[in-house]
Every structure is written in structure tokens, then in C-alpha cells.
Image (cartoon, rainbow, N blue to C red; front, side, top):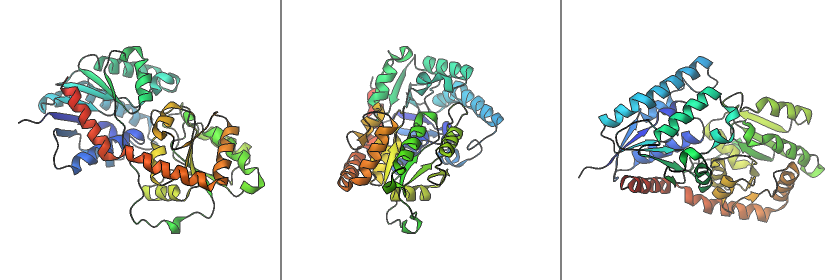
Length: 376
């Protein structure tokens, strides 16, 4: 009996650096590790080539960005539809949001969040208009949406273009766990610190974190604490908050207390997670919040803002700010420093919560969703 064929478009992996990269990698690695499946998967282009090639990554020239966008739209408009017929696909799966306008079989877009609609001012207006038009048109015929939290599903349901498009929630997997037997003791910093990992975007609310941290170490008993910010600049000038954060640190005279590491490799990142006091995530807008799960995987207590997706992912396993203010955040950080029992309790709850986001659960839930979609 012929297995249904799923064509997975991983072209965006050439540029992906954050959540979409983890999403695609988790899916592809699980497919490759499984000997049996009810589906036949076609991954295009070659997963390892797209994952490892650096040509379009990093602080690239403007012409490279434009070149990639042209290639990306060309693929979605012409190449991917042709591939769907060539491979006789029953479903075309696009984990990078945009589905082809036409294809063989059904089409599924993974829309991770609603940033395009929440903050359109952060994107080039003409590009955004074209992108959203193609997305809307691509889902009109045989299109469905998979998203990653109930929070995002509800937000998408409020957008006129998607009200009639079927939407389903499949929780993704976290991509970072401590390596078994890894010894990071020789990498342990000589100071205690709070940790944040992620690109320096305005929506991450890092200015408030820095102000709260400055107020915290203004107290004599906390003056030895540091704040470690791991990550690169925002991907676009309109989103980037790096220069503002550096100026804020200078104004508050925190140059010796706030550490910017830039991008780090996985081993170094694991070390930062391993030795932190807690992970702090005061973001204003998230579609999921993968770093919460990454922190849970290292047994870290986590502080989060009162934001829908973060609270859904943490599900009572993190310390939630009642108000998104520097005073509330400073109080929460001090609370964790003083209360070992609370740190231990949050650490235990986080590890339990993490079980809901295993790669196996993600993959099985995704396959179950594919069955429902294909069976109508």
C-alpha cells in the first residue's frame, strides 16, 4: 500500500538562526532517526547542506539579503509547486510560514507567531505587503495552519484573512539539552549571574531587565551579581536594540556588571546555562518562548513576563511577573536569590514540564495532525 507523501520545504534553513531553525532541525533529525513511519517524507533541499552553509548567515551585505529573498519567492512561486508534482506529494509542509500558491495535494503553513501583524512598522512596507498577500492567497485553496501555542492560534483567529482557515496547535520540541557526562566545571565563571539568551530585539524588553538589574546590584548584598546577555544584534535595524542597550548600560554605569557575549557555540552556551542563578525572560511579545524550555532542561529557575505564550509554555513552572515593571522584576530577582527552596521547587517543576516538549512527542503530534488533515 502506498504511503502518503509529505514534501517538507527546508529552504529557509539557509538563513534561519532562531526558533524556526530549531523547529526544522528537530523535525528533520527525528525523520532521519526513524526506521518506520506511516508517511514517506521528502526533505527539500538537502537538509545538511541548508543547515551548514553559511553564505546567507550572519551580518550579511544588503545585496545578499535581496538575493536570498528573490530566490525564496522564486522557490515558493514556481520550484516548490513543480517539486510537489514531481514527487507526487499528498501534502506540502512549510515550517517557514509561506506555502506555495499552487501545488499538488494539501498545503500546511507553520505560523509561529503574529509579529507581522502586531508590529508591521518593524518590516519593510512593500516587502511585508507582498509577503502577507502571498501568504493569504496560498492558504485560500487546500491550505491549513499549524501553530505552536493556543495563544498564537487565538491571535491568528482574530486576523480576518485566516478566520476561515483551519488552525491546529502542535507544540514544538526544544533543541538544547545538557550533554550526558559533560564536564563544564572548568568553564564556570568566577561570579554569580542571571542569564538571558536571544537576539537583541526591542520586543525582548532587555532595557527593563538592565534597569531592574541595576537597581538590584545597587544594594550592597547583591553587588557581586552579574547579568549575562548571550546573543547577536537584531536581524534588522528596525528591530535591533543593541545600541540602545549599550548606551543604557553606560548611562547607568554598569559596564563592568553586564556582559555581552555575542553569539557563542553550543558548548559555551551550555556552560552559561549550567552555571546561572536563573534565567530571566521579560519579553513583551513571543509566539512560543523556546529559551524557557532550554532553561528548564538545565534545571534553571525561570522568571517570565505576564505574556500569553510564555505563561502557556511554562504552565505554572516559572515565576511570573504580576506587572511588567523594573520594580517587579527587581523584586522577583531578589526573591530567587534569597529563597533556595523556591529555586529548587521551580527547577523541579521545570524539568517535569519539559517532558511535554520532547522531540518524540512533537513528531508524533505532528504526524497525527497530518493524518487528520489528509483524511479531511
